[in-house]
Length: 166
Image (cartoon, rainbow, N blue to C red; front, side):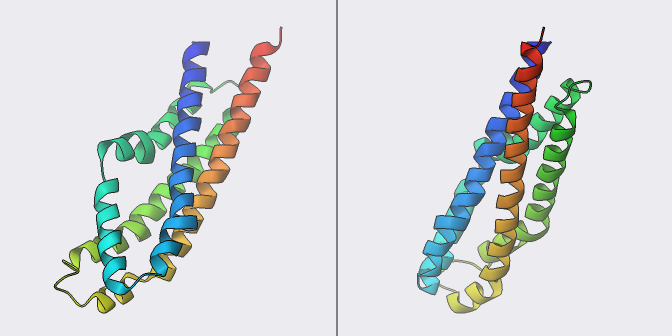
């Protein structure tokens, strides 16, 4: 059972770290880079990336996987010192999912629904997208997942420490 507990905690930590990295890259490189482009480039590039990221690896191993693995790790560590840290990490992960579904995804979907950048009013589509709102909530997702990742790292430390005690 100890091996399964550690494996679930490792999977939770890795997938949460990956998601924190995805959100951080959007905050620190992708969106600032797109902000410097013309409207047609912005709309076309954002639409293309949003379509590409919706794939089984991202959705199952990252977006949903990080929450599922964190929940599993918590369930397997119910009587362990790491449980409070796992519970908070899971709560932060859930908040991130809620923010994504409530704010970022609707903005993404609206921009995709605007149509082909070659045939639409790209300035209007970009303005309706509300980059500032998207970026603010993405920064929130980044912070929440980074904290969750740190808590899972601490849970790993506590798990190793308790395993080393006689």
